Image (cartoon, rainbow, N blue to C red; front, side, top):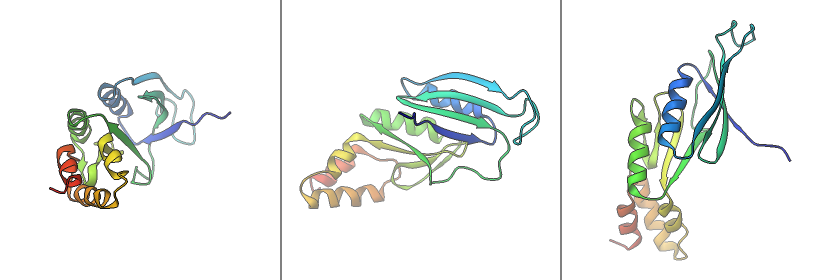
Length: 158
């Protein structure tokens, strides 16, 4: 069976990004880093850096070299959090130097998009009562950083 590994392309400071990600996300580690020793289509010898790393239970590879494009919303990393403290910690750490957006979305300082989501949101959105799910969705759409207490209040009709 094939192995699925996400691949990220950084324009600069891949090492800084990976250090931040593995510090913030439990169970994460940089497995190895290297620089391509010979000229490649992506740049001269030593200018292209590559890495293998894990974020939680997901495997990634990364490359750092010049690119004519940057990350966008078509690829993002979703972090499903157990509680508000974890939402707050990841939100603060990943949004530092980046850009915050609606509905739990942020773009970190390296340009990668993240959605920091409490597990409780998924549970509430799956409520068998469609009115509850609708209220929760409407509340979520008004939030920037997602707030579990606010989502639960919306579910309860408050």
